Amino acid sequence: MANHDPISDMLTRIRNASEKRHQTTRVPASRMSRSIAKVLQQEGFISEISEEGEGVLTHLVLELKYSGKHRHPTIRSMQRVSKPGLRIYKNTRALPKVLGGLGMAIISTSKGVMSDRDARKQGVGGEVLCYVY
Image (tube, rainbow, N blue to C red; front, side, top):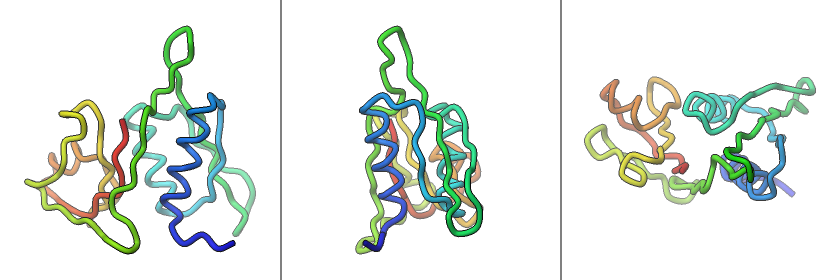
């Protein structure tokens, strides 16, 4: 079956692995998935990114983070905002603050994929890909 929205697929794989307390999850590699994974790592939601396979069959292996003695997932929720059927764009002043600044939005800008905080600092807007908290 063809995957028409690879970003949603990536978010769903991470969300499912996090809920089931898996240590790692694999997602198909692409430039966009690498960029999103890098932002998640910079913001402290995942601990490590590695690649396996080669060519078209390359996958990213994401090591998920958990906190506390009972291994509570660092990622509590991931929500896709801009979808293939309805793209959502925001300028720098209208960028959303997720949970009053406790969460983050991942934004695709002309300067690359970044968190909402970085986009505000650089004064750029763009497509709101997802919310993570």
